[in-house]
Image (cartoon, rainbow, N blue to C red; front, top):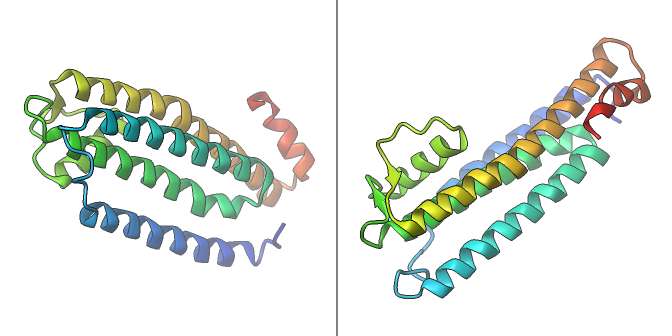
Length: 186
């Protein structure tokens, strides 16, 4: 564990790294050619969606392991980046699905897709963009389930570990006492 004096500096560097990676992911989303997954190849589309979900789930599970076993500041980079990757991935799927007539109402651009994905993740759902076709509804349901299981699980583990870290640094507890206080999450 880093000393209390070096931890904020290391955290700032890692948080800056995370911000740079998030900007790079969003930039890649806007620049990526998504023509490989068109409406004329539905098997390729669905295999891509399922493969993407499995890969994202694996990344989030790996990040949960980092949060549980590794240094906390390493999670400060990994968790936001993996969540951003999930948002960008689902937004890309929505861009492709929106090309098929009748799948989405109000989704015309990549920004619309990103907006819809973030509002679905945050459970706000303004209603200005919504799934209207069966394929789009299935993918939205998959995203909601993905968010409930993987994103919420990762956030829960991260906040529990952060509370333990705060207990260690500011309340004078040992790491063992802090972890014992969070054993209800096991």
